[in-house]
Image 1 (cartoon, rainbow over the protein chains, first blue to last red):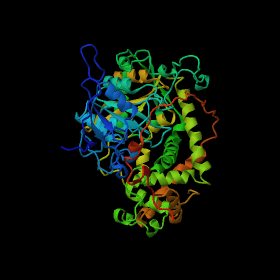
Image 2: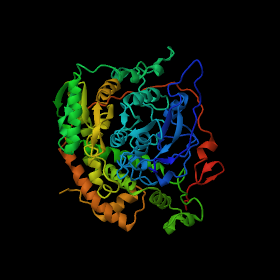
Image 3: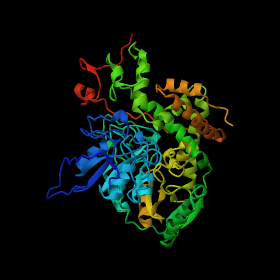
Image 4: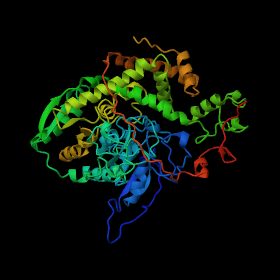
Length: 469
Length: 92
């Protein structure tokens, strides 16, 4: 059955291959890439009609790293348009079906990537996570997904939706394989100034600018440099403390909570101490997340004007032939009308909704009310997590508060869809790492267990996830 | 109720600011949805002012000349080009 996993199925072979002396880390491994990650010479659409013909002239840093690690790319996966959605139904290329139960959505926005792994179309995959877009589809498709700490993985070549929130992350069938892929993609990148150029343990204000005398070795210093994430999957978890975030159980489906509790009991039986934590700020996390993400989106997506890429925007005299309903004054030379017409046909409904709401939240008179308060809430969430990590090594929640919706079920009410992100967005607001690992099934539908760690605590969440597995 | 009640004029105004044409149908749907969504966002009023000093510092790199995309690569996705440049709509 066609799950509509790929927007573009095209094989790209590794740049180098293993020989008798060295075995590359991803030798013989097939990787599916979310279609908002740039691949040189391979169409990259972001799930949007706006970029239906866009062919990047360069590779994203993570793609370059995959090719150097011996991986074979098998295609570009379906996604919610520009990452805006949690079901892969806002794609201009049609919805992807959940391989576990094809009547249901695979989650999103990296739904194609999770479906590719769950169906066996690829060994592993890359997604991007702005508010849960790796963890959500991993949970709904019954696979593993990691959202790395902000700054661990380069975003160079990731087509931006909300830069301050997003990270590229691995999706795989097992914790071990996801960790191996994280080992390959993490590290500093001169092309992305938000990747860390220190070990991540010192406060950023202690970092001195590179000294012109010493041959700067800051480039090799990065939280991932001395670590092997894959090794963490084998480590003993006994003696560790896991904090259950009680605030995020209240609104969740009872069957999801029951499955989550069973996983917690299993951890307890392995010698982990379980405590309960409560974070008051979480009540405002979804509001803060959407205000910030939409605001950043309204700015990032301003670049799609039909001049540098996208559908022709009235550059020619006969623009009326290519764009329906173009206002007559396009030919009178009104740039704004021309851009607005291109953006009308290029963007889908959810993208328009978010651009407009973001524009509204940043506009004069509303900036303080929405955007500034959202930044306060973001800081509050960060501080709440810091306090919680004084009581526990790792925090745990169900990844998604609900089971995968049926296809078509959730598109009617956008607000209801936003509330589905309650357990995943706090992690992005606080720039923390988190992993989703399968915890079991309810009525044949997968439930994900989310482990959240302190900044650059990828190893410890991988340890806990391996213990749940 | 929200003190930021939205009407169709406001949606049209924001759409103009954002440079997105909307159909009559979209304007009506968005007006209803935005009222719900903004009413939900209004709960941010309850967030206390939070002290925070952004952990920001200038990170310097050496000023070295490196390669970049050449002109033809930069132009390859443009729907219209002329004399090695992007071509935009006419300005009267």
